[in-house]
Image (cartoon, rainbow, N blue to C red; front, side, top):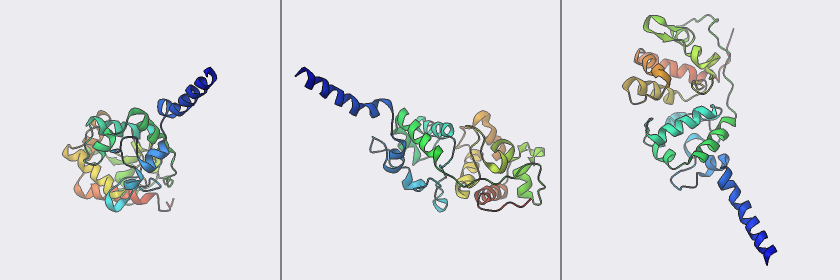
Length: 216
């Protein structure tokens, strides 16, 4: 009887281990979280996590886990506003946020082109992407977001291959004040200095850059 009790307790501990010590990021991405309100990420962001441009759903694949986790936490706290993402993030606990962020960070993404500031820019959009416009206090996009917009660390996510609709939407959100969760309000100031045409053009530039062969 004593042996049976030990076996039973041991079995319960094994079953409880995943819930107590970790969450399945792949399962959350494909099927959703424990809370039914936390729906599967792939429903909007695609089975490969590369987003759905026509609907404005961004690429999540290959983004830094720290950046993804911060955005989910900001949606959950309300410091970043978005009607769909806020209730979904609120339905995830800390373990689930960490797990699904780590999973999405490992998903393969199209490589960013190796465009750098040393290259010659032949048109205004490329000049803005590479060099910025310091007369308006606009740094080059690649200065913060890395060569080709490949991303740098947890605060400067990849731009290359991201949805053009999403990129333009975020720039406009920073311009109108509906988004303000960036470090030191850097993007708020940059976006407000850009024109409508520049917002659209720079979004298209990075959205298609990962799919184009970059010529020296």
